[in-house]
Image (cartoon, rainbow, N blue to C red; front, side, top):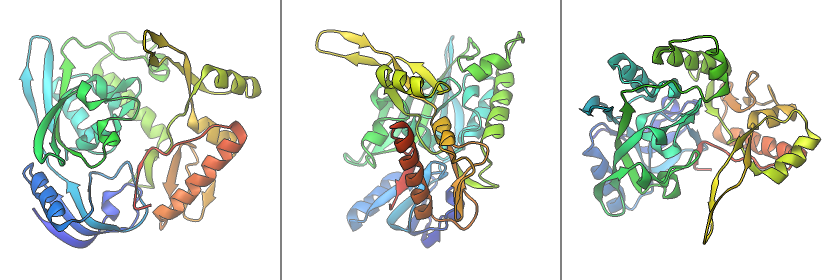
Length: 348
């Protein structure tokens, strides 16, 4: 396991913030994970694991130990009459995994194309886009339990997935994902539940997984900036979910309000209820506050998509968080709605 001291993380976070890790350990084999944890525990140093840094805000230098997930590998683990089971290691690029699966004839991930980051980070966030979430295609995963110092295999249900949430977020730094196994059905059905995709293929028959893959890539490229060209972490705020009463009040005040119906299940002592809620488009809320293209020094709101914050060059994590607070305050003042930050913030 290679170790660097005072190593820059500029190339390991998509905002391009030039922060340093006091001790940076390169995790290239599964066996490096328990060794890394053992070293951190014995030296009583704080620690964390990072991957591609596509969902991170590094606010300042990282003290203690930082593990850089770089374990590679992907394969068809097994095949049944109805499904392909694909295993991928945590350091693999998520998008490259999606593309590879298509090339091998394993369809089912195409709606999640071009999402930045590594495979190991995907379960933490329960990544999702264009009508599909990881939770719908994950069979199980292998993780190292740092409390019990042992390897564990977790099923989909044991990961406690919900919207952009999981057991790994609820118990941070307990479980380190080493690999995931995906459950992809051989009988493929195009997922056109997202309106933009449905409209795109309204007049097309014989849709293929490659068609959806290419369309999703095109849509994402039209809306989101390339981190290689301008630092960003994609969508910066969660789309807030409100109950029907709040939605109706907002709709009466703002007739053009952009929102999508959702029906979360509420469990009571005796019954299970389905109560309508609404997911508000955070980008629309920010845009209505006149903040699209807004800039504070070297950081700002992307000119083509208000949900994306960018580093124009030379910005810092602290400057970005100050900008985020400005946006949250403006939206709260205008709409009475709280925006929560989606990326993980380190050393705030």
